[in-house]
Length: 251
Ligand code: PRP
Ligand code: URA
Image (cartoon, rainbow, N blue to C red):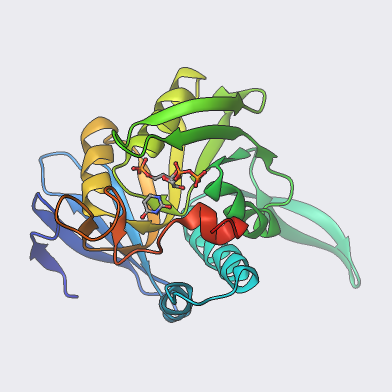
């Protein structure tokens, strides 16, 4: 992809390569309006591309599916936390006193959306073991595709925390949107989302409702299933299938 314009989704976007460091390349797609609105970071890296290719295989054993979800989550989180501020501090190392850097006063909470988001928690905690976990339980009505809340337990002091939503799938966007709204009502001011696969429909919906949100994805797929498709409605194509079932071995 080159710097330039494309009509990738339903609206026109400007594609800018923002990072070309040795280890990561990230594509950031901004909507082409007078203000820069929601940023969609499609993390473009050979390791992620390769692991996503394996993850999409139909016959992947449950354990391998879980391991890959954890690894890809960690790689996406690396990018989602790139702008965290750091500060200098003094420590004693083997050769005496030295100055190192640490993350500056930023409290973080991971927000896995039950159930499938739980599968991403292991990978996220590997990178930030001290993060508090805020759990949001939603189930999606198979007919209306609307999310229904059944459990919420948030960390304390949400207004002081960076909240990172974890869910493998951004399909219609209903679950992510409900979670974002709930976090905003709890006082959160910096809310980001990490998804493995996103549908253009879900991205557009989040964009319209929460222009300030930053989302980080491993892949943007073609579309959602609908009438005339030989699959249930509201699934991402080509997608992963039912991510919760694949993570928990329930089908
Ligand atoms: C899946 C997925 C998301 C949601 C995405 O969960 O993990 O939470 O669907 O769809 P949306 O963008 O259209 O809201 P599901 O409700 O199937 O529950 P599960 O995680 O328990 O399988
Ligand atoms: N939920 C899933 O698990 N998969 C999809 O493709 C869409 C919603």
